[in-house]
Image (cartoon, rainbow, N blue to C red; front, side, top):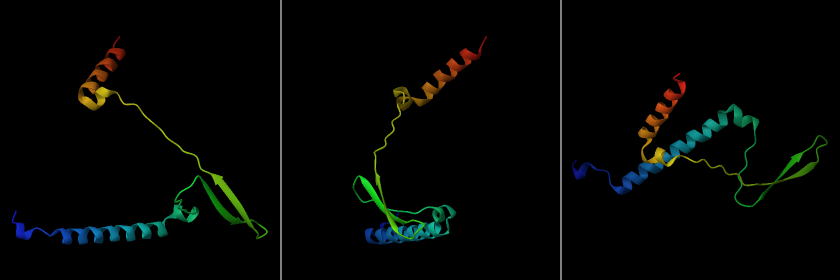
Length: 103
């Protein structure tokens, strides 16, 4: 490639920023038109271990609702051979399956 035809770092950053703004605008428009987002409320938690919200009951008075937040995690174990040599592990499993189905 010819170096003179390459965009400068500044031009690349300007283009990335333009694309990011476009994607953010499209995302907001999609949220506005979403049926699901019209059914639920959205809140952003910045920090802390509880959420406090207020709602109006049938009488019109405001009620405070406090919800404790808990952590949630999930782990999964993968066989080491699946990471090192996934095709060989797949072959071995196919051999075992065919031996199991054979009379």
